[in-house]
Length: 262
Image (cartoon, one colour):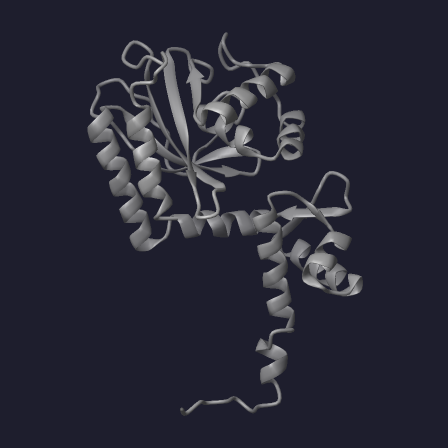
């Protein structure tokens, strides 16, 4: 077997397993996979790095937007630059076309507008959507952000978070009354999230826009984590949210196909 080895003096420092770039990537991967803020001590223990090294790496990543400080200032969470990279990756090239095809097939099946969404900080972002051919419909462009507390996707993302992270988000967002049916009580929203987590899907009963119903199901990765959501919305006169939800099986089948395209 023939192998090529770079023997230049700068090679090991630039690309070896203990290089600063490798450590930074490992640190970002750890925080992204954990789903919660981590302290310097936790990061050091998990990555087997000295506290001084972790502090230096976190300071660098904070400065460039890859990390942000959590509420208590001693812990670190995913920053806007890392979230943007994750969203750009989900929207990249061939995979984006394949995901769009899944939405197109779903719209043809259920006859209503369907969306592919993700959690972006404390809001929901629309990654893709396919409109149904109805004369009256709600238009939200790709890249639009909508609230967590009153949308089907938003409540789904809240419900699928670990309890402490969910509580922190609910406490940190304004539960603005968008319609007469919007949930504006933190206790009621937590109770709704428990129901959603139990049944595996979320609904919006004219909570975001009067006269508009919606439902959302999770799109999970190979580890079972909710990475995105598929949602359908339509005027309440056309789409009932009675149990069993008529569109549920089609939404879940589309979410299963979408999971393979993450």
